[in-house]
Length: 298
Image (cartoon, rainbow, N blue to C red; front, side, top):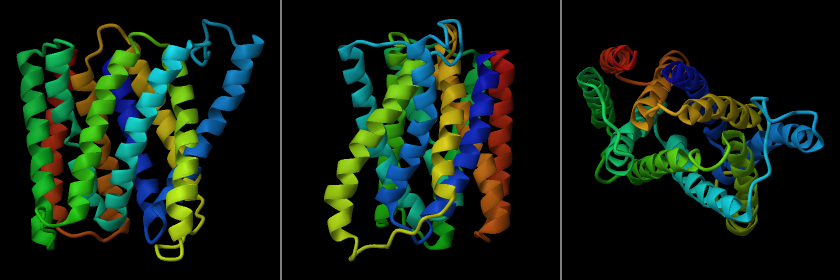
């Protein structure tokens, strides 16, 4: 059950990557982060109201319970980690091809896997190990494909940005597993989204606004609120999967990164990016790895 939820999350995560790229092309990063976060938070306001007023009861999938001050602080920390990850990743996506950024971002399960084994004492079946190794191996091949496109991985600062964003994303994934053992999943998703907006407002006002004349100007696009909407849907299925007691963060993270397939296909068709045939071969390897992960999980 939980691996199916992870695959659904991967589907929406792939669409999320596409609308990010469309929004970020020749556009300012921080305002996009702010407005996409606002669109996410707006979805939770009616659910929070219905939960507080009793129109939603505790048995509902969408019920948001009251949480303690300590739990709010824990979610604030998650928001800090995610905003950091997004800031680095968004800047990288703005300046690099989507067919390079998405696969590098997808190497996050490697670090999540290492952390899950150390922190949560997770154990994989032999078939799952094979699936993990194959999947992450082809993710690595994707990550070095940029060398044929004139992108120097050692000197290009945007490559460094996406690596930092990926590592922070892996930290966030491990922290999610910890949080969901203590806090209701809807409360995690709701309040974390509110804190994102609270963090992004001063960033935009203090960092971006005074310098906006010297940087890329901001252009409103209707794809911007879709970033937040598709992320909320992807995260809903992701948190639901993590909430299931026997779920494994290492497998969920790897399956979720299968959303790179959606991003890759869109970029190949509409963005005319390079080395599509070679990258398609790597993508086949990812599909094989994901198939083994699913079969091993069943």
